[in-house]
Length: 341
Ligand SMILES: NC(=O)c1ccc[n+]([C@@H]2O[C@H](COP(=O)([O-])OP(=O)(O)OC[C@H]3O[C@@H](n4cnc5c(N)ncnc54)[C@H](O)[C@@H]3O)[C@@H](O)[C@H]2O)c1
Ligand SMILES: [Zn+2]
Ligand SMILES: [Zn+2]
Image (cartoon, rainbow, N blue to C red; front, side):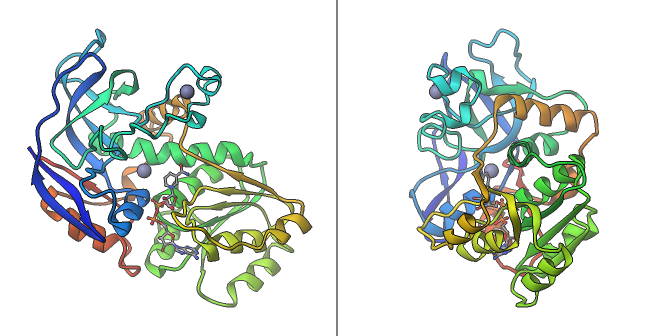
């Protein structure tokens, strides 16, 4: 079957690979839609591991249910891409995101579970979740990034009336901003280096205002506007300028949630966290409950996620889509891949 794999730095190749075969551990799924994620972009930019078939934000139809007696061929599903052991203390308390095994065999992020940039995938049977009839395949592929935002917002513990800053207007920033509003934030401001994405965060009704992160006036303007800083900052970029601006723009005693991932060491001004007695939290992934909650929120139309989808492309357009998403000037935030096109 046709798949898209990492070939080198910012380079994919389309190649024929063997189809996954039925086993007791897994459910086989024909992929319907698969999202391109900011984390996938880090792998592509670094060009490794060579041969990795990415795609951890997927929806599809069951072609072999494995040992899942509640699933039938043709059922519409999504799934958590992760591989928690379910036996350690973290797993036993529901915090599967802390498990040391969570990402080792993750779908689309490990070599042994190739991802949705492929016609068919295998997914660990206990991680597969049915999609209600009211959830489309497009929405099904959006559950995973939506759950990342929900997890970050749960950690942020936003109080009604709080002033919230979201740094970065990719999908993770946008869903975090969306949930911050739902939690009762009085204002949600977003900073971006890409003006097209910044404008889009406001035109979609997600942020109240956006500011250009490259503009030297932004930090003083925001400090004045908030009378000394935001109650909560959700950092959804992962580079040094973004992390340092979160330390500068949060108020004394405020909370920062770091969601952005850096694949390199970065230099940050920890003295600001000391002087302001900040709560600086990391956020990784989601719990299974949060993942299910996002399916429910989408199914009951309490959150609308298709507005974030800019394009749906075939496997042949994956390379061009990654280039588009990293151009720094395009407004596109989320591109879904349909391997059947
Ligand atoms: N912690 C987790 O569980 C988790 C899950 C998914 C993604 N992530 C990470 O979160 C980050 C965001 O993911 P995404 O899919 O939205 O990525 P993305 O690349 O689509 O979005 C990042 C955005 O940040 C903007 N940006 C760059 N520098 C900036 C700066 N200094 N200030 C403001 N904005 C800036 C870019 O223009 C871009 O729009 C990535 O690092 C990704 O790896 C973390
Ligand atoms: Zn993702
Ligand atoms: Zn575990």
